[in-house]
Structure formats: C-alpha cells, structure tokens
Image (cartoon, rainbow, N blue to C red; front, side):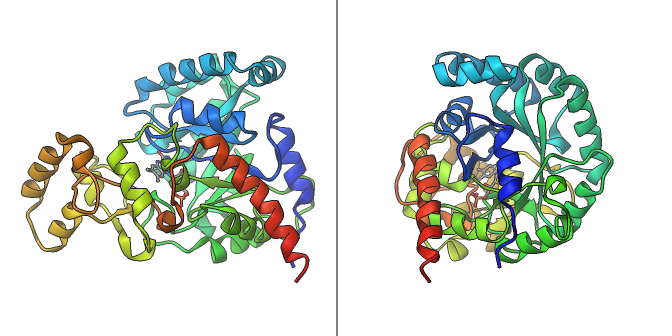
Length: 361
Ligand SMILES: Cc1cc2nc3c(=O)[nH]c(=O)nc-3n(C[C@H](O)[C@H](O)[C@H](O)COP(=O)(O)O)c2cc1C
C-alpha cells in the first residue's frame, strides 16, 4: 500500500505557492542549471534550482539574473513580493562552497529554498550551513540531498532538522557516493526510517531523484512515498540549460544508460577537481577519455588530449569525444530537447494519468 503522504504533499506545496502538485523540481546542476532554467521551471508551476557556479563568487550575479527574470514575469513577481522570497532555489556543494559568501548573498536575495549536497564533514557541516542560512533568511527552506538511509537518518535526527530531504538513487547523473542503491529500494527504506509511524504534520517531505525522466518513473516515485520528484538528466536536454550542444546531442542520442554511463573519478580529475570528499564519484557518459583511462593510458596524456578536445567546441563531445559528460542512466528516455516548461507540464500531467490508470488495475 502506498504510504499516506497527501497531507505532507499539501504542506510542502503550501511553502511554494506558485507550484502545482505533483511537484516537479529542476535539480541544481553545477553551471548547467542556469537562472534561466530555474525560472523557466518555476514559471511552469515547478520549483527550479540554480546550480552552483564555477566559483562561489558567481552566486550573486546568478541570483541577480534570476531576480531580473522574475521581475519580468507578472505572476512570479507578485508571489516574490507577497512572500518576500524569490520563487526559485539555489544548490550548494558544501565541501566546495563558502558559507560566509553564501550567507551574504542569501540574506540579500532570499531564495525560497536552498539545497545542500556533498559535505566533507558529514552532518556537522550540513548543520553549520543550515544554521547559518536560517539566521540570515528565516523563510528559506533547507533541502538536503542524501544518497543513503544512514545520511537521511542523520539529517532527520540532527539539531538543524532540514525542511525537505532529497533522496538520490544510484541512477542519478553527476556526483554521489560511489556505493548506492536505486530509488526503488532506497526511497521506501528512507521513508520507513524517517517517517514511518510519525504523524503527518511531523513527517519530512521526501523528494525522489535519480533516474526520473518521465511520467512513469515519476508516478512510481510518488507511489513509493515521494512528495515530489527532482530531475537533472532530463533538463540537460532543455532549451534553457547552459550546456554545449555537443553534450546535449550525446545525451539525446545515447540509450541503454546502464551500459553507456559509468561511475568514475576520471571526469572530476580532467576538470581539475581533485578534492571531492572521500567515497564520492560521478556518473557520466563513457567516451574516449574514459576508454583510454580503462586501457591504461597515463593520466597526463589523457589530460593533454582532453585539453585539445576542449578547444574543438561541439566536436569535443559525443561517443568519440573526450569531454566530461555527466549524465544519469535515464539518458535512453531523453529523446528530444524541449523547453523546460513543457517538460514540467508533461511530467506533472503524465503522473496524474499514470496514477489514474493504475486505479483501474
Ligand atoms: C550534469 C549534472 C550536474 C550536477 N550537479 C549537481 C550539483 O552541483 N549539486 C547537486 O546537488 N547535484 C548535482 N547534480 C545532481 C542533481 O541535482 C540530481 O540529484 C540528479 O541529476 C538526479 O538524477 P537524474 O540525473 O537521474 O535526474 C548534478 C547532476 C548532473 C546530471
């Protein structure tokens, strides 16, 4: 039987008054989830997160851009004025972030939600960030992305209990713990550990992430206990993403994600990111860089070839390309580049249809 989450969903949605249930979330993706993408998702009744910039100093210009875009949308700007909050979220990789820079900018722009991810020092670091953010922007809700049951329980039991937990399964594109379970087992186990037997006013809303591309996966996640769904890989193929066309083309053309994507540290290293917390790696599409790495080509040589590929623009990407192409196993279901608003509406309407059809079983 599906867990009784209706009240939790209603409470979640009430914090983001421009949204429509089932809640569709544009996940933060470093650089790629631009202010333009986040605002397009929110404009369609979802909640869009802006990804971390290339450096912490990019945060202020990003939020300024989001604020300007929101000002030109009558419905979103009305909500922003009424709530005193920007109707978008912002994501941080806390291990690489700067809390003092973040606090100053968040105090000024007050986004509706902040999504924290990848601490180097576990829950202690997430608590510091949560406390710091709450002290400068009381209305901003704290979302913590967790890759395991243990991390979810640690967050739920912490002094700075988050407002939302994003449960990320192993199919997700981008970074996660190297060891992980798929969302179909992870989400119900997290639900039982965190919300089982808890009265609905005290439950932490759970958002499912990892491998959700379209309505069937999204509906399944809702049945498993999710109060909403977050998508990253699907929005790589959105018109508003800040992404090279060669990267986007590879995502659209590739299928069979369990075979065509790999978990690796290589792409981090090629991009000069040597400092990820221990036990984390990333999922991306296999290409020539990865194949050379597997065949024992020395890293320095691989990096040289990567630098050459980076100069080739679109040509540097693809099955025969060399660029770091983070993407999830769901690539085979991403078949077309679409507007972000269209993606949000399709998945949201589709969930209702799939669940209605399942009532006829
Ligand atoms: C290219 C890419 C970059 C990402 N960057 C971040 C990030 O900076 N911070 C973060 O919390 N999650 C990041 N993620 C993970 C997403 O937020 C989300 O959890 C994930 O994409 C969900 O799985 P899916 O890709 O199967 O939809 C990234 C994902 C991708 C594909």
